[in-house]
Length: 100
Image 1 (cartoon, rainbow, N blue to C red):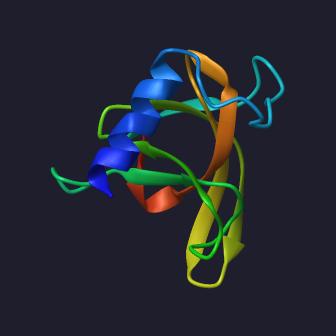
Image 2 (image 1 turned 90 degrees about the horizontal axis):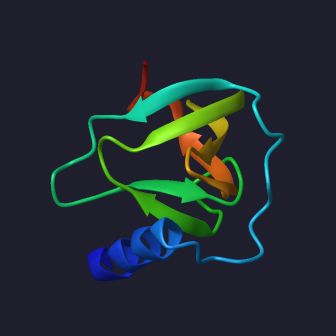
């Protein structure tokens, strides 16, 4: 699983993963992924919830542009896109984001 997520992050870095929803350019505030276990990654998901498809794995230090957030159950999910890979967007848990 970890190798699969690492492959996804690598694909993103080199422009892969066609078919992802593009965010509105230039909107949202920047945040950094923090607090993820050393051997794991934050899951960027297709929708707000753990039952949605994983789009990519994001290691600590990844910079995201957050566009909006919503509460789903006990978790605050944020619609975000990767800085430097603007075609890649999805939802992440607010608990793993730090304002920069």
